[in-house]
Length: 164
Image 1 (spheres, rainbow, N blue to C red):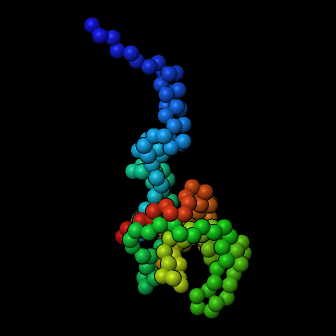
Image 2 (tube, rainbow, N blue to C red):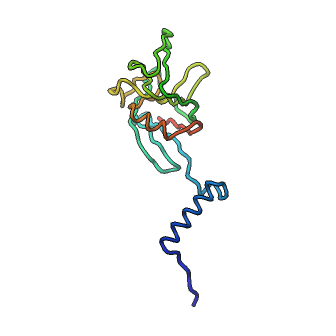
Image 3 (tube, rainbow, N blue to C red):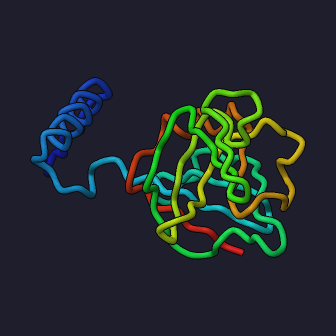
């Protein structure tokens, strides 16, 4: 009769730590490393979901573009990340400084679309009652606490998928 050797609980945890250490050093295939993050925005549900691989980590309520100013649908990636962004009124050219209480971008900006002139992104809002509605000029508004949390989790290059 052949005997099988099993690892005890302590040995298993040491093995997992060793494998994770090797993956961080680049000695193991990427498949064993942490799956990448991605953002998915559902316009109809007015919801942003942060995924790690196929696992949803967190869902956030959002506001999206209003009729005539719809949030673009498609696959994008995070291209800008700004703390206390300044806002320039696209109609008058007036600039509201970052951190000002009337700045419509709130305290964080995560840009994911541009036509070379205008940008669309995720941002906070001084108007929390707008969350859950189609009211913006194409951007995705979030509660300030939510965009600040998300800002700390994502980085440039993270995929952003916007679905109807």
